[in-house]
Length: 634
Image: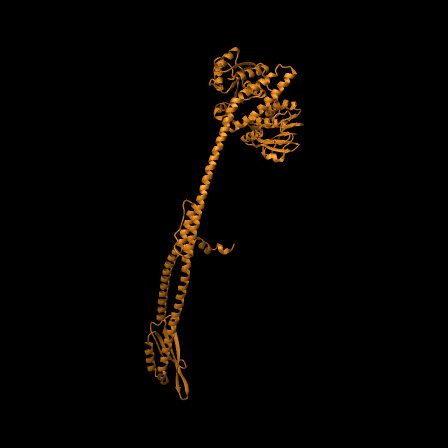
């Protein structure tokens, strides 16, 4: 950039307003012109004064030389003195001196106050000659000093008057220039103010057309542009308002549809889960003490159909619970191998029945997460891995990362996922139906396409993300990251033994559905449990009178037809055994409710909660965990 743009005149010019610039432009030429005229006139007047003084001195000297010819020829000193005195009395004459040709001073007259500075004295010398027929004879010289004091005083006075005239003209010019600048810049200033108002966009803006010059054309153009912009803005505001209203209506409709869907699913699932739960219990209990191969085969088919129905219903139920906010995150630190052991117990038999291998490598470290959600994520991923694999099996393992986290991976040797399907596998209701193996080998359906969507929702609650890599025909790997519990890493010797047996445990079941009570009583007795059932609080208190001590486990439905809840049943039993000095019992709630407003009390109480329909494996695992927690606390 040019250095001139950083100089102080340039910076001063940039900071000046338009009116100041116009006044400056009007004042500078006037100032220059006035200064030039004053200078020229003053110099001309000074030259005239000096020329006049010089002419006056020349005339006096010439007159003195002419009248001193006769006295000087006759050497009449008295007359020469009189001539010098008479010439010395003339105005502005400071000195008169008459000399001979040899330089002898014959008369010398000077005024007493003639002690002027040399620059205020003008000296003129004239020769005195005598012209006769024989020629010109030099008789002497006359020296006349003329004072320039008065001329200089007049010169100074003239200069003062010129400066006063210059200042007066500059003042008048400045006033006129400032007024002209205000008049010229006023329309532009009004335009600038109108542009600022136009930028705020609160109302229509217009300026008054002051003349028919270029400024008037600019004002008219601004008015037209402002009117057009105002019309466009009003049209856009109307369109935006209309679009906003339409969007609000659509959002309201979507929210209403989503809420209606959630309510429908919650209400319908609550009514459907009751018979499905009973069907699950009875189908599991049919095979107990049955040895007829034909009947066992039919029972196996019934169980497969029930499991397929249970799987479809569980997918829908899990998504409904996530959408209604019924799932709450409870972060804790726990060994990752505990979750791996639970997954192994759930799917070892499934893998064996399908001729597959399920390998789970111990992690030997602790993680910080929600154990229940993590277990559900791994159960779902391993279930999918075994479901869509014909040969080989599945592998669950871990890898540490450099940022203090562990990556959990689930590998399988199944059919794989085509690249065009990978971006959508975590979407709701997305199924790869065009694949020839979309169904299972046993002919059952693969699901509603909600399993991976549920997995991703759970992962988001845990502040992580499930990613997938796959090669068609080779298999897939799903993986996600978990934070390592820094205080408890690499702890060897974790006990992965099987949970305690339920045989001999006293179990009280409270439910208002007789079919469920019948089915679960038959199932629990097949596990070796001592079972008592009841439909309300009074029957529960009567049932426990048959036992010499408190029950080991109490399983209760959340909402009973009598208006009581499972919490009320637990409280009544606590009061009963606290009065007798009994020990606490393990408690487990089973419900078909998914609405968060009705589950807050249960979530706050941190009571183990299962959602109908409950598979026998899940029921047994939860009962074992609940009893173990109570047993360890004693």
